[in-house]
Length: 606
Image (cartoon, rainbow, N blue to C red; front, side):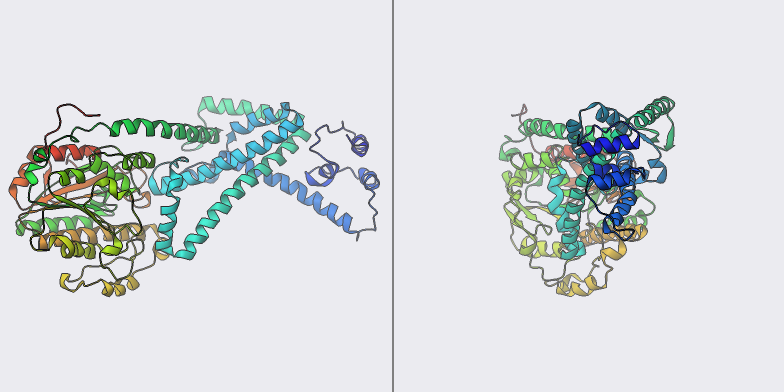
């Protein structure tokens, strides 16, 4: 230890500091220690500093350090404690959440005090960086629970970065998307570096005051144990004996391990298929010669027809649609399917329904689209019905489309639309359905066709919204520009949650109106429409405890079609009641294939 440090320690009347992380300047200015006045001249002599009175710059710097040092240490301590006790749910984010005792701090102080100086500093930096990562996970958890009603998955959800930026770009503009991306990266790096600094600074404070620190830790440890046994809380779900950060870190590591293991297991499941080897003449025999349109209605969940704040307008559209279609000679049956996702992740629901497998993670999706799974689209193609995809939301190369087995895919650029985007939605759903009719189903002598189309006007952020126009005046969509300009911008609507819910309900009403009016106008004896929601809307609309059920409906004019599903127990009409049957979405493919004349192989084929 340098001689001047020994002299200073003797002058202050305490044992020399043995942690070489604490320098002379740290003792005097940098770490919140206030030097004894008598020590200042000695220190000044030791470092060879000449004083020139109160105006001396070096004296002013020392004064500022005496003020800023304790303030910085106090800030570091507050940051560490706040990061440890911060909940990972927005609903729990209230002042009482911070009046808790984090067990990680108690264990950390003891561990740091028993380690040698160099190892102590290394552990402090690593622990701080880890705490910064845990803090990032907590913040993402808040957003994911608010938007998707599930926690953040560190392994799988990083792949959502690109779609997220694209959504921000389409909804709030390129500048807003770029600023958000840069801000998130800067925030993440700042949190990791800042927490490493904070833990290191608190460690130095604890080391200098080791005996008082141990006393405080012992007292808090007793209080922690007592509160844990008594179940004391500062609010619902906020125990005083807190261990949230350790739980979040453990669950994140466990989730990554589960994701890796689940991906391998799912790959084995995807190889087993009861219908892969069914001969063509034994597939979908009851739908030969039919045009089957499978339409996914974005964010059309059970809450849209049952939540009193959302359902009046949606129910009215469905009831009116039932009446109009009945008058046109159509009949319908409806029920519910349980989606593997909520709030977002439409592609997971689409793939679940078409593959007959539960695709609830991005890892499962990636695994599946790299396999040769026998999708519902492929079944139609094998049976002689031409499968096509009408994909208004596909605005760039989509290599995964090959997996589904389409004969042709119409992306947004292939549909001839020249009008404006409606936030994320590249075109109104009415235009998409009109383009389907013009390009495929309305062509004289066209072959029997199976169409999959996701309708996207009800995609978040639900503003601005299109409205129905005369089918004969749709043209290339340019006249929709006035509707896009008249609608409110997402940045305005999203300031008010009540307005967001109203806009969501209006978007569902619009899409369902477009779909039923299209069928009424263009459907015939050989048209079969299957439409369903892909998932519930975000929790800002439906709350954090809504089911994952979505309505599903089959409509046909040929009575033989609905006779095939009489045993399903589905309800008449487009609007299922709460007592309607509920199936998991992954069961639909096999039930549909079986009902419409497909013979499974005698044993599952690996």
